[in-house]
Structure formats: C-alpha cells, structure tokens
Length: 350
Image (cartoon, rainbow, N blue to C red; front, side, top):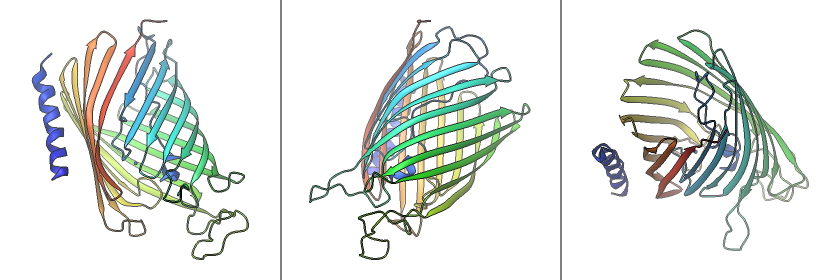
C-alpha cells in the first residue's frame, strides 16, 4: 500500500508540474554524489561563469534517509572548469561526510575532456544497545580518493570513456592499518540513430575480501578467535552492463542494466530507468526508478528492492533554478520517503 502511494505521488508530481503552466561503506567509498558532469560543447566563455548549487535530499535515487550536496563551480574560459563542494549522506548503517575538488580540461572544441578529482570522506556508524558502533570488520574510517577520467568523441557517433580510481582507506576497527583499493571502468557509447544511443559498460574493483581479511581485535572470519594483527586479503569484483537512451526532444527515456552494480556482490542485477520531460522552456520533470535483485550471498538473498524518485526543475529567473520532489525507498533494510529541495544560481560574478 505504501509503495502504491509512492508511485501515485510520483505521477501526481509530474501532473502538477504540467498543469502549473508558468546505492555499505565500502561501496560508497568508490562512488558518490557531488561533482556534476559539465555541459560538453560549450566552447564560448560562460556568460555566468560562477555558479552555486545546493540540494537537500540528494540528486540520485539512492537509499539514504537524508542527504545534502553543496557545490561551487567556476568556468570562466571554455577549456577549464573547477568544482569544489561538500556532501553528506545518512544511510541505514552509517553516515558519511565528504569534501572534494574536481577539475576539467576540455578538448576537441569542448566535446571531449580530461577530469581529475580528489576527495576525503569520513564515516560514522550508529550505536547498538551497548552504545558501541556496530560496523562490520571491514568497515572504513577515513577514505582518500584520487580519480582520473578521460572521455573522447572519436566520431559523431562514437564516444569512449575510461576512468581510474585509487582510494586508500583506514579501517574503523584498526585505524593504523590501511587498504589500497583500485577501480577501473570504461564505457563505449554509439549513436545508432539521431534519437537513439546505445552503450556498453564494464568495471572492476580490487578491495578487501570480507570473508578472508583479518582485522586486529576482531573475530577471524568463520571463527570466534580474535585476530592478533590486520591481514588484508584482496579480491576483484567486476560488472559488464549497458544502457540505451531515446531522446525525442520534449521527452527522453534511458534504461540501464547493471549486474553487481555496487561491485560488492550484494546485488545480483539492477534495472535503472529515467524519464525526462521538458514540458516548457522553464519547467522540466525527471522521474527515476531503480529495481534491485539481491544476490544469494548477500544479507537478503533473493529479495528485491525498489526506489522511486520524482523531481521538477523550475527556472524562476535568469540564472536561478529551483528543484523540488520526493524519493521513496522500499528495500529490506528500510522503507520510507525523503523530500527533495534544491537550487542552482549562476551568478553574474566574473
């Protein structure tokens, strides 16, 4: 019944907008919200080069109870853009805070780019009945991350993107020990028709194996004996998926299939759907839905999870855009909704 109400609310949001007429700590260490991809092809200097964006409730269909993002971006000359910001996320089993700086260098008349990103994230965990935090043995405390990404438009119809991440992390239960995690991903996008794009995506992650890594002072996996020292055993997880996108001008649809989307073996497969409605020059609506099938080795084998999210964007003045919506989560670990609100101001400052 609650899920049905959430779907009704999402559809109602889209209708009202039209009538108005004026994803565990290890996975979050890999990816997260914050820097927004720039507009490719904008080769001329920006009329409003300095912009400020703030969002409450998050910008992606994740499972957080609450989230906040604040980003300051500067793009005075077309070849460069710099973004800096802060993000906060309140998940079911932990909260995290992250600061980041991201830089873009544009090439090929603004249609290709190289990106560099540096960030620092800190995790906090809820307390159990004894007043102690209750993360698993492999949970992280501090996570540094460096990222390099390159995206190039080879022809009018083919784009390729490759990304590498290195993120050393300290363990919550042994802050003197660190793990050096790495992630490599790539994507090939092909425009088969003017309105239709198809893409294949692959990624691999090297991080500690929770079933074999020993953390000092914590039970050795599969036993009750406490480990005398930390010993990290690495594993490599991967995914191969893809997506298709249809853009009809006033409406667009994107459907993405990803197995093991968090690269931690918690999900078997996921289906992510996005619908964009450009109702008026100053009004747009985005509807998103995520369907997850949990893996047999997860804490919820064979079960499913659903996330629904709808948000409307309203251009209220030159350079000022407001955003409002709602996200509903129905997964084994929690069920509930979050109100979404945000604004973006492209200032007139140089």
